[in-house]
Length: 272
Ligand code: THF
Image (cartoon, rainbow, N blue to C red; front, side, top):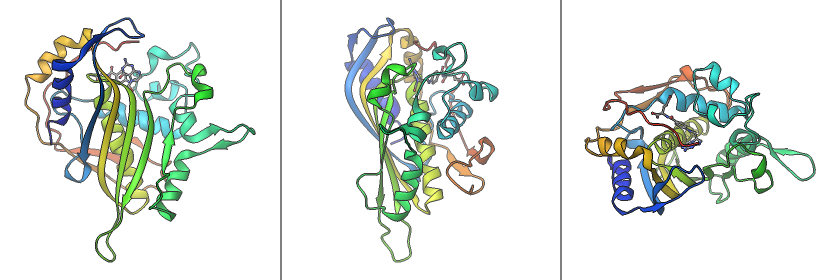
């Protein structure tokens, strides 16, 4: 359904409870929610406001680099992590580090993304195709603990001889800033699913978003009223212009979104 995100926002607006939070801003919150986007029907980029896909693509490529310094993001015009960075730009062992270089007790490192590609190719029936950013031993060294913490891939086998399997992804997001963060998070994982499908010769299936503490910040209420008064457009279409040699070789210019019909941008402050 094209209005799933807006329905979710309306649900929390109408049924959420007033709840304090770490940032001191105050929220309206619901615990537990799920949305399912069929990626074969369109690219789930929210249409009831303009979403800046450039920042989303650059952030995802930065995760895939295993990077934890905002410098690379800033050089590409992406400032969404600046609020949390130390003076030298470091964020500690956040997403990218855990995805690509999860430290093991014996001093080694695990590249979870490389393992996902390998499993999707060699053992697509596996029920263990998982990436975790929630490294309990490292949490206190992170500038911000992971919000999108744990994701799993699933391949539905081809239904015709010589056909392609279908790749789905489910994310567990422990903490969800519905107005600012969630449109980014949905698009980011949808993009990653498309990239992995391309690399592993699969079609795209569903992206399933599962949220824990789903909240609207009190300083986003005016924006929420504006957005909920708007009618969603059909989703745009993602085109990946070439097939890079590996999941780690994508560049910003490889992506284009066609037919993105959207309402005007809505500005809001991020809670730090
Ligand atoms: N903290 C909070 N409070 N909300 C979040 O969504 C969030 N994240 C990341 C880490 N901590 C968070 C950071 N991601 C924007 C978008 C995503 C962010 C942070 C900020 C933002 O301000 N977006 C604006 C402007 C975009 C731009 O300038 O390019 C927007 O209108 O979308 C979620 O994982």
